[in-house]
Length: 169
Image (cartoon, rainbow, N blue to C red; front, top):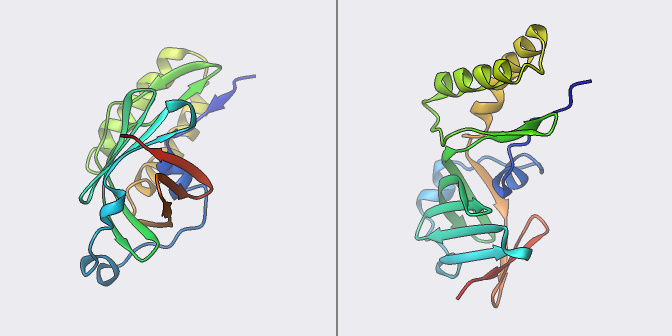
């Protein structure tokens, strides 16, 4: 049996898809100043995950590989994210794959990459490929929707969706 893991593998996915979130509207973000205490690099346990915040710009790195770029604003204890570029990755029968960074206008390039990857592995039937590709556009587009997630900072600890990160000096 073919085991397919289409993990999109990044904390933003945990923040965006792993919980019920509310899309941010223009009024709630344009009039808000960004929380300056977010600025800097935040590291997860073991150093695998890094989140960088810099005056409205966000980058997420996993194992030293840039996975996501976004813009952000804050409002109260809410972080309003708009993904601008994203890498998709996962595995098929433990064969890992990773895409380049794509922006929301590169859906066709993403779909071509995924189709080639599925075909090259030889592990997915044509019917399986057709089903995976049928689901991919919706999944791709969902990653670029604006999202709002709660966060808090206490000293050098950032907590969001139950994940704690420590500010790097």
